[in-house]
Length: 338
Figure 1 (cartoon, rainbow, N blue to C red):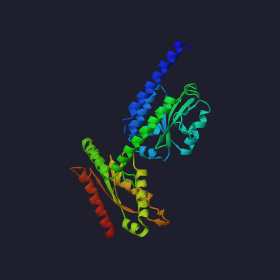
Figure 2 (tube, rainbow, N blue to C red):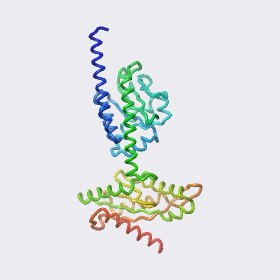
Figure 3 (tube, helix red, strand yellow):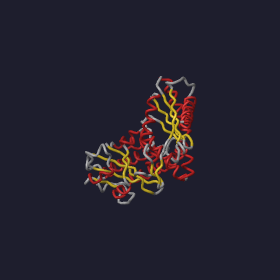
Figure 4 (cartoon, rainbow, N blue to C red):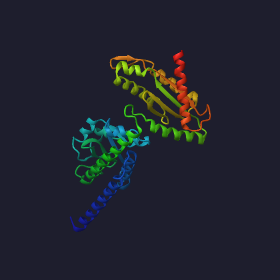
């Protein structure tokens, strides 16, 4: 190898190292998953011209549970691949060093992005960790079989993976604090503080654009009896059950929160009183059959009150919430008399 070739190779390596350093610098000050995912994937794609860049995250890992709350669901669906731990461990051969693959790509289907599997001829898979434990991988795919092939130097990619792992550690710590501030730890629903903020925002939007907004106040029936008879663990199970049904049936724009104790609130934008009532009737139908929990069958029943901006003029979001609470009280009193 002549001196000109050596100098040229050194310049190429220096330029490559500089690009990696720029990416590292851009992500180290990010403290939320959405920005981290966007910046990391976009920068790799931009600086290296890689057609496909995505993350694989191990199913039910700490990161996947926190990242599922991303406000931009498009990122979650198209640029993040959920993978079983055993599958990723097999692919990485239980090692934390990057793998370069250009043969038998089909056998790595579990790590490939669902919408872009066809056409990938070579892969770079760099494992990432959280507190020393494998939680996913940073992946690149190319239609050329020579882009990533065994034998290429992976030291810079390995260093980037280490920096990404550090970022995941920082972001996870911040997301945990954020989760504690805005989410109910038992049900995973928004808490009262977060609901108050969301309701104020939706109320302002409804007034500004003359769109209907409905609020539903929900209260479990006989919840104290369940706790006293079967224990608080069973009571917690009932709360989580109702929360899961509400989340399962809600629309993307609907907001479900645990207000306090056995009380829940649903904030339904662009929803009339009748539509909100229909939504709650559907929930009642879904939980009609007894829930089997802690070795017994329990009837899970609830009462609810609906208030809508179509019904009356409300001065603020709190007045709308109060109206739903008042209606709930009226319904419960009526049920007692009945």
